Length: 104
Image (tube, rainbow, N blue to C red; front, side, top):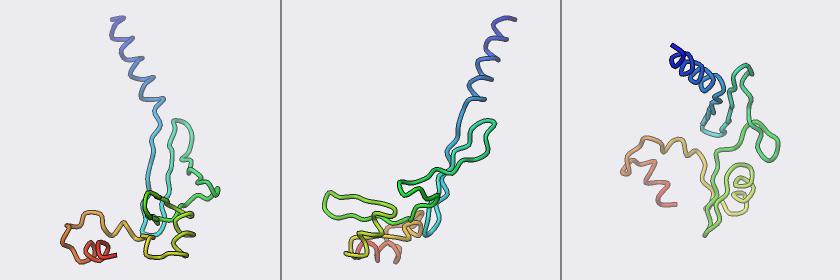
């Protein structure tokens, strides 16, 4: 009986102290939320203290940037900036949208 009580308490403590992360991937922006027990959802701030981060990736050589930094660099060299990446999820490699991204 005591063993069952201890196991139940251990499971309760583990489940009740767990936090969850939620990713909201949109076409243009993404948001990250953290849900903690007893606390409403908390939206994570990015380095610019904004709640939403642009869904843009900048790739040049070994340099990989995302978010506002990628948007800024992408204005100078748009061939290295990729946005609307959500359109690629779940598509086969021979899809016209994927082919367009590969040709860039």
